[in-house]
Image 1: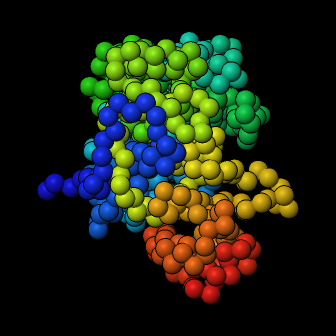
Image 2: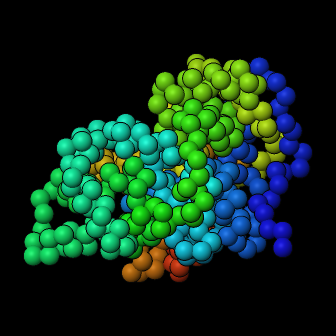
Length: 420
């Protein structure tokens, strides 16, 4: 059975050796590269999800669950409703696992076949590089303790940080907080995770359950010869430009959190090899690079609510530069100072962000709450409300919520409430 993500819309064209792009062209290239504007499949399967995540390169994970966990939303935005248990299975089942968890763009779910591309980062982490400075210091100072933790995981099998502490100190009630408010047991596990010696076997109530990497991932991947750092970084830059379509060096560097020096060297090498096309983009001050396989759709009928942690918008400066859309997540802003709300999702219509809605899933009341709704740049509410309402209803149904409630905050709230 040939299940796949639908092909690019008919009538799209491939840019050939362009030296300059209009902002309109750059937007459409970027949206096409990210998988927007395609016909959504009637029934989403594991093959659809794996193909999409390979296209994006990774899914960022975040702990905020006011609506839905961050890694679930990009799939919904592009493919529509799907069983969230399907992604969980693809990320944790012993046989048929498609993803592993590691540091890509923050904590991320990454296609299993990409594991060799991150071995250099694991190696550098074990040497105190490519790792948070506090955790690197912990690794240097606590080598015997980290080895003790590793051996306990080896003996015990899958274990959480709390379980590990109880195994090593069964009579201790609690432990003092360490780096980043972690206990030293959690810090040791995270150091081993960065170094690739252990990985996430599965998550339970979002908590990582760790085990030895060699027991979680396929043997041929773990035992494969290591790719050099330069070769792996070149492939990560290739993947980044495929996912972005057109990007500055900083955009490419940010996608997989490469260092400034590594990204600069790899981009220059790929330009020299003809695998990146240097271009200028209208109103961009920085030089840009085009994916040679990029396409410019003549028509792009995207319609999607986009998560704050979606790769389309996670680099805020790029979002503003490309779409003229200034977006900041306001979770850490005091409530009285928030401009648009706590957990705001931009609404993409065509090739523009036309609105933003502050959403909350009230699971006890089984309702989707639209606590605020704002139009963007004077967009016409009459053109926004029907497609936005369809997306909100589909989102509510996907999350198992039976009603949608619109509050009164924002210029779009009234028209949206009346239409509902």
